[in-house]
Image 1 (cartoon, rainbow, N blue to C red):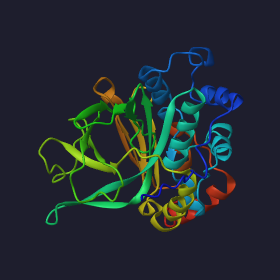
Image 2: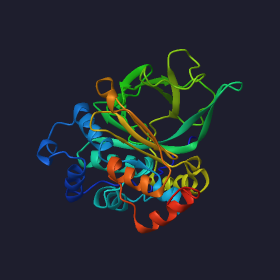
Image 3: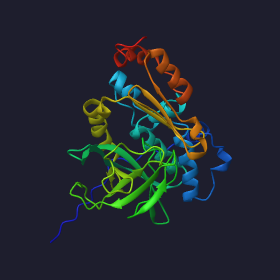
Length: 318
């Protein structure tokens, strides 16, 4: 005789209330009258996605400078990203976006994913990192789409199926492949998201194992993750992994490019039409970094973060 246990999920994803949804739409620059009551389609998701990644930065400032984890409860995430007009890493961005989609009546969820890292030759291989990334997805008319608002900065939903392709910011492309590698560790079929940069900004020499310009970025599936599980992974991500101790900020530009800080370098990568706006700047002082965060990302550091910058720029001019 087979026993069947009626296990129930302990909690569910937070949903924005009507007041929060209105404030969120204002934060990302979308008039509420153009969104609420509109038919739930992938086109509407794409509109929300493009505005989100161009308005709310990916940033790990709090984690790197103050060594404190970002919020997970939907009210706390809302206060951080909407009320205070700050950004967050993949957990906060994905949870806020899912909370907005759920409030609009979509069937949305989040799941853990493994990021990948490439070791240049002579090793020349990809390594899978721990389950530290939070990926978002939405199901419309039985079709599931990836909607990653983390560092990938997707500008359109991509169907989760083998060989599906989509567009990213800065003229990048993404490709989803069925995962047939031994790097799985999921209870359901998983997929690999690969990213291809624009021709004028290729990957470094050696990072093109298949000869098609696509680099594996993460291994994921669409099994819904319980919010309580994020407490464990958020602790690991912000106290052990800590994003490889790298300072990371990015935002989609008003022209569809990518504005990004990696460690102490600012880079703007644009689409073909606006390549004259491409820029690369080395950051040498606290004053310079604060100015770039304010001007390019609309991020204003609080007093504790400003003081902690001395640890990030110990030898630089203050």
